[in-house]
Every structure is written in structure tokens, then in C-alpha cells.
Amino acid sequence: MLIDGLDEHVEDLELVRIPDGSHWVVHEQPRRIISLIRGGFG
Image 1 (cartoon, rainbow, N blue to C red):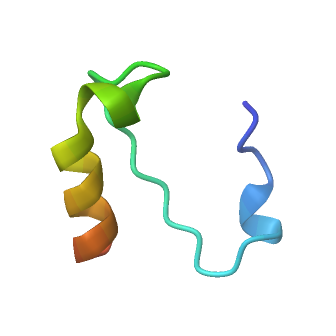
Image 2: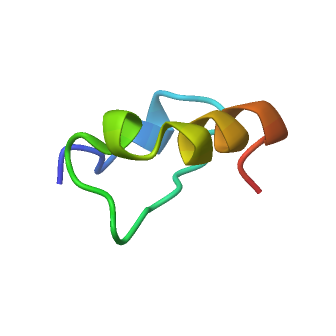
């Protein structure tokens, strides 16, 4: 995967997987993405 090893370069990396999301998840589920960004990820 492209994200393998990313945590070595990004401090406090938190990955959120959206099972029903496609490559265009930001356009398909904008409210969900905004909520994640504003509320923190976990």
C-alpha cells in the first residue's frame, strides 16, 4: 500500500478507513469527511 511506512514520516498520524468509500470519498461523502477533520479522528 502507498501508506506503508508513512507513520515514520508523519508525527501523530491517524488513519481512518471508510469501508464504503471510493477514491472519490471526499466528493461522495463530504459531510462525513468534514466531521472527521473537525472532530479529530478518534
